[in-house]
Image 1 (cartoon, rainbow, N blue to C red):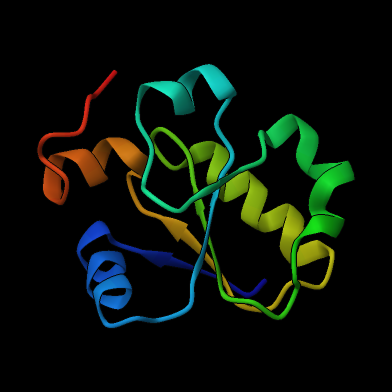
Image 2 (image 1 turned 60 degrees about the horizontal axis):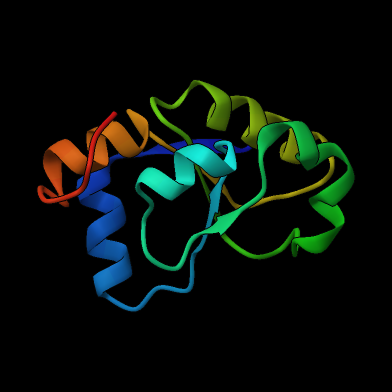
Length: 107
């Protein structure tokens, strides 16, 4: 499977460098309402099986959830559908808030 782990620090560095990454947040809408990484697209994990067609399988995609478990499942599901450049945010948005965006609300 072609899924790589990416740390919050590495993701921040790559975003600041202007790398074209799709941030795919697979949390539920009520979770996304609490906090989110700016510019991310929200498709809840339960909707991904039917909505994956909205995504470009050749675009570098970083899957995000609360702690990294659901996003790992999302990345694996996308890899099975032929997506090639997949990353899972290690520790999820909770670790992002802890290490990168300190003012972000945590839950």
